[in-house]
Length: 274
Image (cartoon, rainbow, N blue to C red; front, side):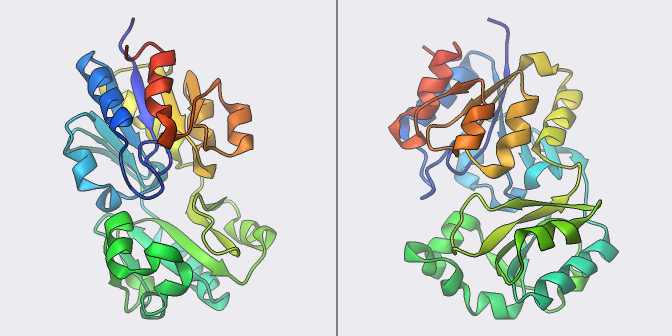
């Protein structure tokens, strides 16, 4: 078969939501990369949040991070789009006025106001209430003494906003775009805010442009709310068995959940392994 470019979400697709890579998924990556297919991480996580051990497997040809804000081929940065500083200040004010717990996801790391870091156990229940477990899964968070002044911003992640979904979407206007959270941790309005037009699908296009491949050569695997555009853009879109029903409806194929060998089975269905 022709060599494919396979774009892969991380949480719930490559790894379980507990942050582990099943043996079957690792074997799928090993076999597909050995056959010459390009495997590309395509995640809402910024590059500093992508598990180092995942990158160090040697299976991946590139990374689309920050939900499309940055694209790397190998270790080379080939595309980057940052939040405009004035729009950033406007968003910080909006979130703080609505008492949201928010994180600023940047090229250099993850930042949050001091009040957020001091109360993180309220955001993340269960094992993620433990600071060490939280850092292992999401990466280290640094204090933003003045969130308006943080530079190199890819996107925002927020929890427990005292605002309705429609109010948030109205605020976003033509510049920002709101996507409800993949994690749904709090029972309140949680989500991520990105620059409109710079999503995973745009990151895919930038990667393909850099390596000289076409959309006809693409496959995408995902499970969450920010994977819709990715699956719609790819020539073949695959939803994990643990994906939301609306994502499954948009997918060309549905495989099993990640913790039931779903990634390997999906690769097998498409002839990437086996």
